[in-house]
Image (cartoon, rainbow, N blue to C red; front, side, top):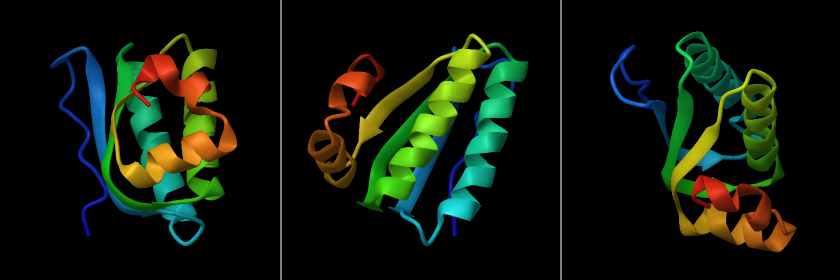
Length: 108
C-alpha cells in the first residue's frame, strides 16, 4: 500500500506528500507516523508541507485531527501546511465542520 511520497531534499518549494485511501480512525496511527515524518522533513529543510488529498476516499474526524495537528506543528516551527488538492470526501467534512475557512488559504 502506498501512503505517500515525500519529495527529495532541496527540490522545489515544498515537501510533497500524497495520501491515498482512507483518512479515518482505522488508519490514524499509521498516517500520524507518515505525517510526522513529512512535518519533520519540512521543518528540517525550512520548506512548506504540500499535501495532495485528491485520492482520499473516506475522511472522518480522526483525519481532520491529523491535519490540524500537522498544521499546528508546522506553524509552531515557522512553516506552512498547504493543501494542494482535496477529494470530495475531504471537502465535505471541511464544510460540515465549518473548518473550510481555516484551511481556505491552504487549498481546501
